[in-house]
Length: 190
Image (cartoon, rainbow, N blue to C red; front, side, top):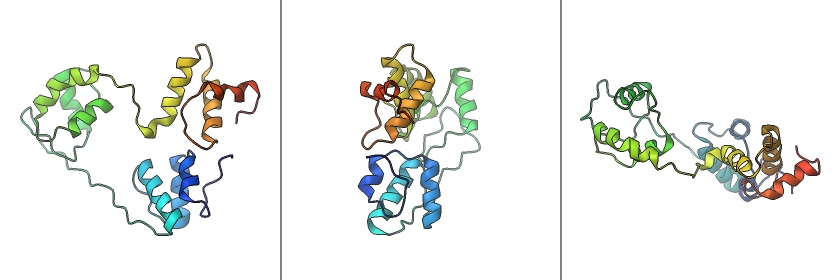
Protein backbone atom coordinates (compact mmCIF):
# COMPACT_ATOMS: atom_id res chain seq x y z
CA UNK A 1 0.00 0.00 0.00
CA UNK A 2 1.41 3.39 -1.03
CA UNK A 3 1.56 6.33 1.32
CA UNK A 4 -1.49 8.59 1.21
CA UNK A 5 -1.62 12.32 1.69
CA UNK A 6 -2.25 13.15 5.33
CA UNK A 7 -6.01 13.66 5.69
CA UNK A 8 -8.72 13.70 8.35
CA UNK A 9 -10.22 10.33 7.35
CA UNK A 10 -7.08 8.33 8.20
CA UNK A 11 -6.75 6.40 11.42
CA UNK A 12 -3.70 6.82 13.61
CA UNK A 13 -2.26 3.40 12.71
CA UNK A 14 -2.21 4.26 9.03
CA UNK A 15 -0.72 7.68 9.80
CA UNK A 16 1.99 6.26 12.07
CA UNK A 17 2.90 3.55 9.54
CA UNK A 18 4.24 6.14 7.11
CA UNK A 19 6.88 8.82 7.13
CA UNK A 20 5.62 12.42 6.92
CA UNK A 21 7.74 15.54 6.79
CA UNK A 22 7.30 18.01 9.61
CA UNK A 23 6.07 20.55 7.05
CA UNK A 24 3.29 18.16 5.99
CA UNK A 25 2.23 17.67 9.60
CA UNK A 26 2.28 21.42 10.31
CA UNK A 27 0.12 22.07 7.22
CA UNK A 28 -2.37 19.41 8.38
CA UNK A 29 -2.47 20.91 11.88
CA UNK A 30 -3.16 24.38 10.46
CA UNK A 31 -5.89 23.00 8.20
CA UNK A 32 -7.57 21.21 11.13
CA UNK A 33 -7.07 24.00 13.68
CA UNK A 34 -4.54 22.06 15.75
CA UNK A 35 -1.59 23.68 17.45
CA UNK A 36 1.56 23.61 15.34
CA UNK A 37 4.14 24.14 18.09
CA UNK A 38 6.66 21.58 19.24
CA UNK A 39 8.96 19.07 17.66
CA UNK A 40 8.09 16.46 15.07
CA UNK A 41 7.38 13.85 17.73
CA UNK A 42 4.94 16.23 19.45
CA UNK A 43 3.11 16.81 16.17
CA UNK A 44 2.87 13.05 15.53
CA UNK A 45 1.29 12.47 18.95
CA UNK A 46 -1.12 15.37 18.51
CA UNK A 47 -2.20 14.25 15.03
CA UNK A 48 -2.55 10.57 16.00
CA UNK A 49 -4.74 11.54 18.97
CA UNK A 50 -6.84 13.82 16.77
CA UNK A 51 -7.30 11.17 14.07
CA UNK A 52 -8.50 8.62 16.64
CA UNK A 53 -10.66 10.86 18.85
CA UNK A 54 -11.35 14.12 17.00
CA UNK A 55 -10.05 15.91 20.12
CA UNK A 56 -7.61 18.77 19.79
CA UNK A 57 -4.91 18.36 22.41
CA UNK A 58 -3.92 21.56 24.18
CA UNK A 59 -0.18 21.08 23.93
CA UNK A 60 2.10 23.59 25.57
CA UNK A 61 5.77 23.11 24.77
CA UNK A 62 8.12 22.98 27.73
CA UNK A 63 9.34 26.45 28.62
CA UNK A 64 13.01 26.93 28.16
CA UNK A 65 15.04 28.02 31.14
CA UNK A 66 16.46 31.50 31.06
CA UNK A 67 20.23 31.41 30.80
CA UNK A 68 21.84 32.74 33.93
CA UNK A 69 23.57 36.05 33.23
CA UNK A 70 26.77 34.74 34.75
CA UNK A 71 27.95 31.18 35.09
CA UNK A 72 31.27 29.64 36.04
CA UNK A 73 32.81 26.27 36.76
CA UNK A 74 30.86 25.99 40.04
CA UNK A 75 27.45 26.75 38.46
CA UNK A 76 25.05 23.84 38.92
CA UNK A 77 23.30 22.25 35.94
CA UNK A 78 19.58 23.01 36.14
CA UNK A 79 16.81 21.59 34.00
CA UNK A 80 15.52 22.43 31.55
CA UNK A 81 19.03 23.21 30.35
CA UNK A 82 19.33 25.46 27.31
CA UNK A 83 22.18 24.84 24.90
CA UNK A 84 22.73 28.53 24.14
CA UNK A 85 25.43 30.41 22.30
CA UNK A 86 26.72 31.84 25.62
CA UNK A 87 27.14 28.33 27.00
CA UNK A 88 28.76 27.10 23.80
CA UNK A 89 31.34 29.90 24.06
CA UNK A 90 31.91 29.07 27.75
CA UNK A 91 32.49 25.38 27.06
CA UNK A 92 34.62 26.17 24.00
CA UNK A 93 36.88 28.34 26.20
CA UNK A 94 37.45 25.38 28.50
CA UNK A 95 37.45 22.51 26.00
CA UNK A 96 38.87 24.10 22.86
CA UNK A 97 37.58 25.21 19.46
CA UNK A 98 36.45 21.68 18.55
CA UNK A 99 33.77 21.71 21.25
CA UNK A 100 30.18 21.25 20.12
CA UNK A 101 26.95 20.27 21.82
CA UNK A 102 26.95 16.73 20.48
CA UNK A 103 23.80 14.70 21.20
CA UNK A 104 25.65 12.37 23.58
CA UNK A 105 26.85 15.37 25.61
CA UNK A 106 23.39 16.93 25.61
CA UNK A 107 22.03 13.66 27.02
CA UNK A 108 24.74 13.60 29.69
CA UNK A 109 23.91 17.16 30.77
CA UNK A 110 20.17 16.41 30.97
CA UNK A 111 20.86 13.27 33.02
CA UNK A 112 23.14 15.06 35.49
CA UNK A 113 21.10 17.86 37.01
CA UNK A 114 22.82 19.24 40.10
CA UNK A 115 26.35 18.55 38.89
CA UNK A 116 28.56 21.52 38.07
CA UNK A 117 29.77 22.90 34.77
CA UNK A 118 33.23 21.69 35.88
CA UNK A 119 31.82 18.15 36.13
CA UNK A 120 30.44 18.55 32.59
CA UNK A 121 33.83 19.71 31.31
CA UNK A 122 35.52 16.76 33.00
CA UNK A 123 32.98 14.30 31.54
CA UNK A 124 32.97 15.72 27.98
CA UNK A 125 35.99 13.84 26.54
CA UNK A 126 34.74 10.47 27.81
CA UNK A 127 31.14 11.13 26.77
CA UNK A 128 32.01 12.00 23.17
CA UNK A 129 34.58 9.17 22.99
CA UNK A 130 31.69 6.73 23.52
CA UNK A 131 30.28 7.69 20.16
CA UNK A 132 26.86 6.14 19.91
CA UNK A 133 25.79 4.36 16.76
CA UNK A 134 22.17 5.08 17.62
CA UNK A 135 20.64 8.06 15.87
CA UNK A 136 17.47 9.51 17.36
CA UNK A 137 14.13 8.75 15.72
CA UNK A 138 13.76 12.26 14.31
CA UNK A 139 16.88 11.63 12.21
CA UNK A 140 15.48 8.68 10.23
CA UNK A 141 16.72 10.17 6.95
CA UNK A 142 20.28 10.49 8.28
CA UNK A 143 20.20 6.91 9.59
CA UNK A 144 18.91 5.60 6.27
CA UNK A 145 21.54 7.44 4.20
CA UNK A 146 24.36 6.34 6.54
CA UNK A 147 23.23 2.70 6.38
CA UNK A 148 22.74 2.88 2.59
CA UNK A 149 26.36 3.99 2.06
CA UNK A 150 27.71 1.47 4.57
CA UNK A 151 26.15 -1.26 2.41
CA UNK A 152 26.70 0.31 -1.03
CA UNK A 153 30.21 1.64 -1.51
CA UNK A 154 30.48 3.57 -4.76
CA UNK A 155 26.77 4.39 -5.08
CA UNK A 156 25.75 8.03 -5.46
CA UNK A 157 23.87 10.29 -3.07
CA UNK A 158 21.15 10.51 -5.74
CA UNK A 159 20.77 6.72 -5.54
CA UNK A 160 20.52 6.88 -1.76
CA UNK A 161 17.94 9.67 -1.88
CA UNK A 162 15.88 7.86 -4.53
CA UNK A 163 15.81 4.74 -2.37
CA UNK A 164 14.91 6.82 0.70
CA UNK A 165 11.99 8.44 -1.12
CA UNK A 166 10.79 5.04 -2.24
CA UNK A 167 11.17 3.57 1.27
CA UNK A 168 9.27 6.34 3.02
CA UNK A 169 6.38 5.92 0.57
CA UNK A 170 5.86 2.37 1.86
CA UNK A 171 4.06 1.25 5.00
CA UNK A 172 6.21 0.14 7.91
CA UNK A 173 9.66 1.04 9.14
CA UNK A 174 12.03 3.40 7.35
CA UNK A 175 15.26 1.49 7.94
CA UNK A 176 17.53 0.70 5.02
CA UNK A 177 17.30 -2.83 3.60
CA UNK A 178 19.20 -4.33 0.68
CA UNK A 179 15.82 -4.97 -1.01
CA UNK A 180 15.35 -1.18 -1.34
CA UNK A 181 17.81 -1.28 -4.26
CA UNK A 182 15.20 -3.03 -6.39
CA UNK A 183 13.54 0.34 -6.94
CA UNK A 184 16.73 1.50 -8.73
CA UNK A 185 17.13 -1.70 -10.71
CA UNK A 186 13.49 -1.81 -11.77
CA UNK A 187 13.20 1.94 -12.29
CA UNK A 188 10.31 2.64 -9.99
CA UNK A 189 12.03 4.94 -7.48
CA UNK A 190 10.16 8.16 -6.83
